[in-house]
Length: 253
Image 1 (cartoon, rainbow, N blue to C red):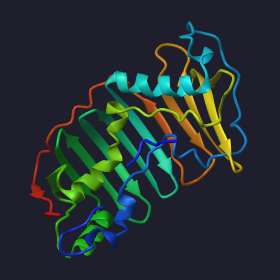
Image 2 (cartoon, rainbow, N blue to C red):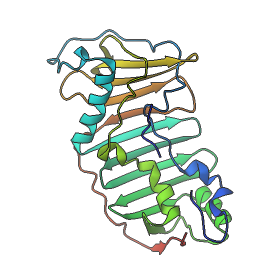
Image 3 (cartoon, helix red, strand yellow):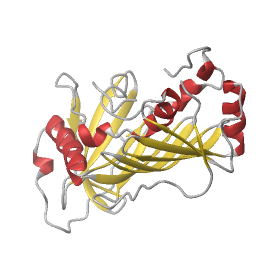
Image 4 (cartoon, helix red, strand yellow):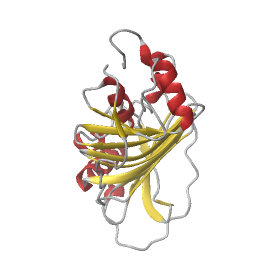
């Protein structure tokens, strides 16, 4: 399976290694994450008939997954909340924009703004201290936004959490994946059809809305290092814009 995936380096030193900058890059959910997934299917609540079905639940498991991913991309934007062991994020995304917050356990958090090729990040004190220690210079401050472009390895690493490829090249389930379709259930008050991939005692379940447009709305995983996701706010403006206040340029990579 493929994933909605996500080194960073400086010319003179392996700068971004010490602070666990490896953990700065987000993995995203998708079919790679589920290659090792397996286990029992999550419990299902009884579906409550309401709005007219969009018919997605009549498709095969692969078709349901692929349709959900494509529908999210076609929306042009959405909000995605992610949680996995050691990190979480809350981001609003479009194909060229990203606004929100990322938190890495033990390493702090940072606000992120991406608009086209420009990226701004503003850390909390823990994240700033760790980054400055790794860089050997005080480039990050809680009082200032750090700016760079996608061509800057450090800023590109931070912006990798945004996973804009979800909107430009939506994921598709590997044809060889042994995913199964479940019965229509209710997820956060919305009717949805689950697609479940199991293996090696673990599982990952994707939910696609069966009323209205067939959006991919949720992922549940049984492995702590795999993402749990919720997507909503489809088609709403991201509204990314350059921040006000003090801005400093990111160190060159």
